[in-house]
Length: 357
Image 1: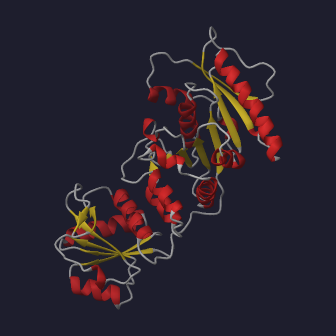
Image 2: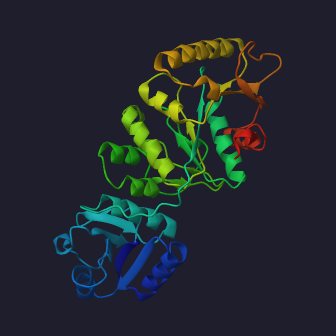
Image 3: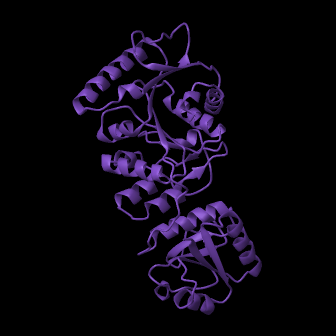
């Protein structure tokens, strides 16, 4: 089933343009009905065959939300992006990219009262989860996770980069327009909304590199609010979408239950180290702790652990001896390079090609 959208506006040219834009970009997801007359629009929504899920009305029309069916979401179409609310109702700027309007519409659809989720998923594939962690700070685990996502995207894979670090920032590596972020997704999970699928679709962004991502939480505490059940719900929902081939999770290393939940579901757990003495010491302790933990919990985690050496310099770095861990390879220190250059350089290497399926 499609999301049915009724658009009420005085400008016939605008109505034609937006209807054509949505019918060409999202023919399987949205069905658009356009109106210039308020009475006809409300009659069609209430009594006709339109049965709209959403009504978007130009700011020249004053709409009483009580006149709308309970299942119908509503927002005003406004001329300026600075206006977020009009007459006590949500406002969406009409003069922006169709993709951004589409995402606003999905969010509105997800939040409408008594709406049954109807958004179609994209097949029956289940995504492969790759988790990137570090036992010691400053080794560049986030940069390598972002590079892995870009490498897989270059191989024509659908990849989602998911930053779950407490103080992480997806914006360091990827960018795209839109107003929603991971905080909105967490709220939807916490609220036990039946339309989580739609909220995920409305919040995800698409970088020019081909990588999908969520903007990081507005507040770092939001990530800390994720409990194991929330984490399981998020990962299972993302996998069940069938939209992604890979989910690259950038996370802090530890044995909190939510972190364990990610490791349990991960196909590979990639530890990143720079090979310095202190990093190797912490990595060895991390591996020992992981070994004890999996024995206590009767889990099989160590066979899925891989090691990547990053920022490796022959003068200061040394590979970990007697470690029964598969080594993906090494990335040299790139002095003078900024974050984007580092990520793109690593993405051009073959260290992650063993993950390709």
